Image 1 (tube, one colour):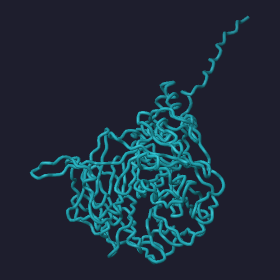
Image 2 (cartoon, helix red, strand yellow):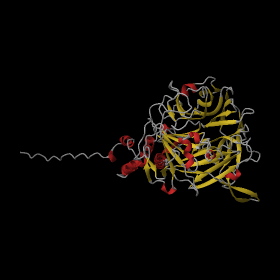
Image 3 (cartoon, one colour):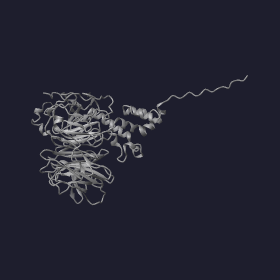
Image 4 (cartoon, helix red, strand yellow):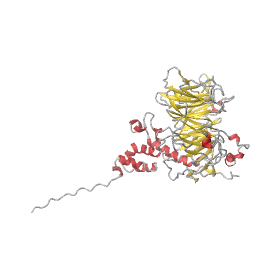
Length: 592
């Protein structure tokens, strides 16, 4: 009788774990992780997960939680569909995630520092020597001003450009050190040579910053301004690379730029009647000044339609804001110029039951699929509308506060996260958090996401009430915090009293130093303000304290004023939604 051989039992299967999951499954898991701290904790559980999170996880997190800002962090030569190429892998995704989550928290809690910029410029005295630094306020042009010295601002990747009067200032910031340069021309005079349009090109590696500059003297040029090998804080060197043809006796009211490969598109509003298109070729250093002819133009009757501003929605579409019965129009760009008939127009009567209205601010609204069908328009009726070319409705969404109907002068969308609106009175800057699918996905830990309020919004003086709901938000005054500053919000009839009017100014222009809005710059009459939401700027003593009010329910406004700078980041009082920064203190007795 044979003895059966002893059979070795099969080994027990090991229990599955996160570190052994396929990468495609990990990819799906990370898209559902709510906060960056949770992803950091996951990366600390094993070596394999640490490697995956370091190489791909942070990029997946940024793409899933900040989808509208994600394309802005890709290299210009890298397509979003090819973001796994080596050029994209060199990006420090964890730094971008840290920045955007910090900004999300600070915007939710209204945690920012605000101050008026006062660059100091070294004045040459001859023989290679420089006098003591003088502030910009002492250098501002004197004499008649065509637009009351309304600064034009633009920003790109650490560079701030300011068109103040007939001069241009550039600021470069690094390691909490500011470097300023002043670019002027002794042949330019205040008033007739004021800068009226300023757009920056992407920074180049040759130490020069290029910009499109329009002036009240009818000139439109592409200039290169050197920011290296010159004395920082002094006068910089600039050269004209291209001169764009304009119309006789037509001031450059506005100009916008769309960079693409070897050729950039430029659309400009000239005088009261013309919108022109230029195709600007790339210019190499040392080349002769290029003369760029008008590639296409639109003519509007000055008495019936007056163009104010223009913005590219894509390479083939241009949105124009103007004064008239149909103040928002969209034209198609063709190889020979523009189509004579607009693709779509939006009437003042269908939006606000008005015969005539004006739009002085217009901006494309980012679409995750790259569709050029959405844009924002700031109306003189006191609201910002989101227009959608794909629907028959006059507008898709309305952004306004319940206090007063004040014309909109400037717009700055930050992805599909927030919309910043500069108004025509009270030095007022409004911030609207956008709550829609594909927009702001990330939520600050402990915060909450409100939903748009249903029902009509009462806009005084705007005719029939709009048919759409409105979005909650908040606003701040770019002036020192004083008791009488907020009077006009709750008692508009008293806004003209003595001591209040002196603090009034439109917010003429807005720009952001980064896609997420870490630094926001606002051009007011005779000054430029910076709102720093990252706390990394250079803040001198005597910084300004601001007032702020929130609006969530129709007709309800809550006022706050800033306290000591040292209280930033501390846990503060409970706001209308979320938790405010500890610096804010509720203003009392303002309703009397």
